[in-house]
Amino acid sequence: MDRILRGIMKYRQTDRKKMVEQFEVVRNRPEPKAVFFTCMDSRMIPTRFTETNVGDMFVVRNAGNLIPHSQHFLDEATTNEPAALELGCIINDIRHIIVCGHSDCKAMNLLHSLQCQEFSSQKNRRISPLRAWLSAHAYSSLTKFQQLEVSGYHKPLIFQAETPMRKFVAYIDPEDKFSVTDKLSQVNCLQQLQNIASYGFLKRRLERHELHIHALWFDIYTGDIYYFSRQNKRFVDINEVTFNMLEKEVLKYYS
Image (cartoon, rainbow, N blue to C red; front, side):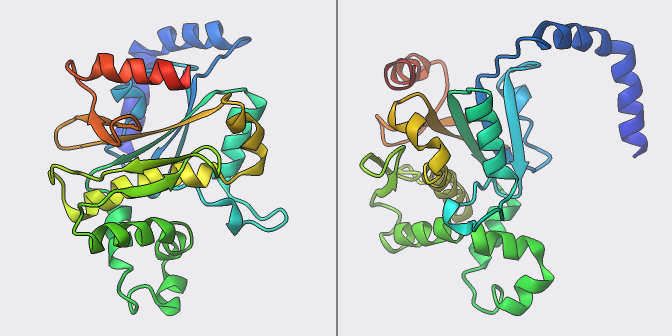
């Protein structure tokens, strides 16, 4: 806590004035461009690696960057994630939703271990909120990953996109650069796009192409950021060589 207090004092002496000025600019007309879902991992600092500023994004964080599928909710039983989708995309008219996973994700490492029946037993879920959370809301990612595993990691996976009739194909780590759990993390990231599309209150906007869903993946050990390109059917490293290609894809399909 001492580190936090000292950080606040440093902020008061350095960044506070500039930040208050930025708050004044966006106070009456905030125009956030994206709802950004990412993991709560302390190494993930999305506003820094996207160079975004005050008022640019709604950021939602949890263990494993999960957006539970709408089928899990009955009546008024819900969680923060769909409420954030409604606040961002319906009330604030945000047009882009981004899900960002990352390498060495502790939640994904645990999810991979849940393939063991004893580890994921009801008894163990009842003493571990994290196991219960992943078992309830990330099992679809694990099932998808198992399809990939059976194929020897070579065959593509198919995910539902914005509407039931729209689907996209994904080759996961075709160059075999990443660990098994990092592959699972990428699968999980794409599964969340399918989960987002399950919400009825987003249906109209998705059908009219007024709302778009994207996936990013961050390699914490290299600092590289990957964008899932539906055109290339894989996560593509965003760099000086690929930027123009990815920008054209985004402008063509998501502007």
